[in-house]
Image (tube, rainbow, N blue to C red):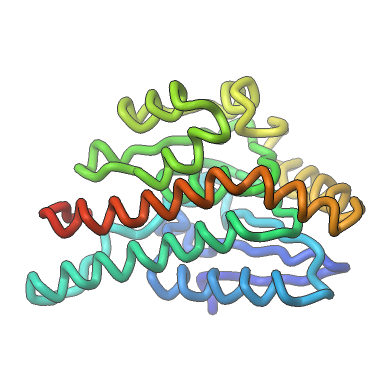
Amino acid sequence: MADLLLEQRDGLLAVTFNRPQKANSLTVDMLHALTRVLHEARNTAAVRGVLITGAGERVFSGGVDVRYAPALPEAELRQYRQSRSTAFFAVLMQLAEFEKPVVAAVNGVASGGGFMIAALADAIIAAENAFFALPEIDLGSPPLAGMAILAPLTGSALAYDLVQSARNLSATEAVQRGIARRVVPREEVAATAEKLARDLMAKPARAFAANKAWMRQPQREALERAERAMVAWRAAGGEA
């Protein structure tokens, strides 16, 4: 699909979010497609690693496109929001269970779900102009998936700070906090991320997968709890 560009070269599958005019936000169709792509990549021997980035020079991804709301009766609109949430959690679980190397080339802003997707990569290479944020609280929604991903990665204090303040985390601070691997000039992000991905792809695959499965277990379990909690929150009147 035009909004999700795929390129496979020498064992590396490059995935690009391609809605720069909409902050590379993810539609429901894009979420479904991304889930299928990751599932197929997990089961395709020719794919030994994945590189994820965003089109353009400003934004990696603004996350799920919550601004789009189809003209539906209220009951059906609630069902649509739930199906959108389910589609997003499916992407997160695919990434949390993905045994092969994944590197995020964060070429700009990684906000909301975009931050969550990047944080589930094995490594982030960030542009100097990049920043990370979980702004959902200002939209009236709790980013439980973000906490589920970040707390095992960074500790609960930083995760709590980010979700309650919705502040921007600079690329430099992201490195200091252990979220990003390196900060490089924007024009070097793609090449640096690809080199790192190929370095990881050169590691013994079975050992890499075993290490990753062990380290990701807390996030997988937390994401399952977060999804159930979001269903309950939405059923109690939450709308986002």
